[in-house]
Length: 433
Image 1 (tube, rainbow, N blue to C red):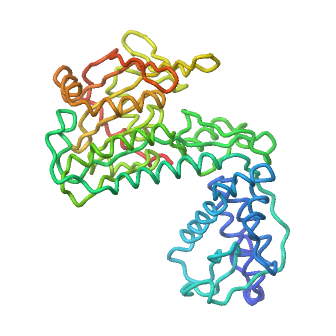
Image 2 (image 1 turned 45 degrees about the vertical axis):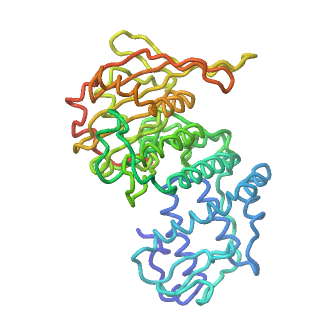
Image 3 (image 1 turned 30 degrees about the vertical axis):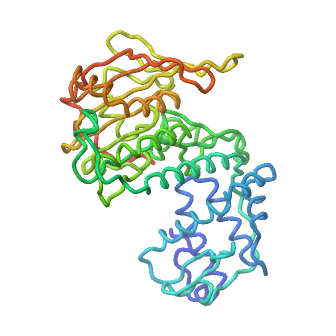
């Protein structure tokens, strides 16, 4: 039996209130499939306030969506505007190619209206109806995420500015590691990011944000919930990914190297987060991955087939499959002197369609950043390729005290077993995210 809001009768069609309610119900049903607590609560708030004489102010939205504790951070970091922009985008995607009335959030204010014509030039000038006030629907509170948005926004802004710098007029051979990437177009720089979950005890308040190495995408969350039904009311999708600031700084270091591979080229190096990497990217582009080993995304399955290491489920230990030796991340928490031990990883191999892939990675940020510096040393990279061949993996121990790197020591170098690396299963399914 269909819900009556899907196909309003003639009386309802003449009633603007019924049309608004029907459209709101249709869109909310689709929005709910994403299990994003923030978007549902924001949409419910806009529906409830759509009949008011004045549009709600940003501070009112922040208080209603993020609560008293989270509102101040949300305002400082423009979180309301970020999520409002993304909700507008979801509305646009929902109505793409559809004729008839549509819901829109008016530009310049936080008001949800029903636009009767699909081709209305601008919501501000078209006829719009506001319904009478409705009871606010119950949603989830989101307490803490503004800092993640701020760090990621700043990092991607810096990376974009770096990529926009003009390339040099000429460049010398950059060495054996980079030589397979001298063709056009420039390599795609993939920045490792992680999928963020929200955990709640009461379906109202977010207790903490969770980075679970075993759940790296929305699809993976769905699969986890199917096998762990008791977690259905505990874990929620925030539609949020997190790139560590150390990863972003390492990518900043790599951009000039990639740019110099194509001197004078009008094309600039492109940046892509690992959560948005597609099989088409793998088949069409040279790839330079920069990030933690836990955030490889689509690159993880083929690497697992070829590598002599295995990343443990906690993503803090890399284990040698043949010897059983474990190489564990130690951040030095709780010590008077913040000494740290990390492991960096460099790999080079051919992609599925003859393009080339270079991985500049680590267990933690220290390892990633140190490897980004090390790959600039042509002599060291030439020795790696000469010793292990064009398809290899190298592991380095990195020790630091405070912010200073004390020692970098190679602990493993060997060829990769690439014969079955790009088995068809490596490229099955959708990209994570």
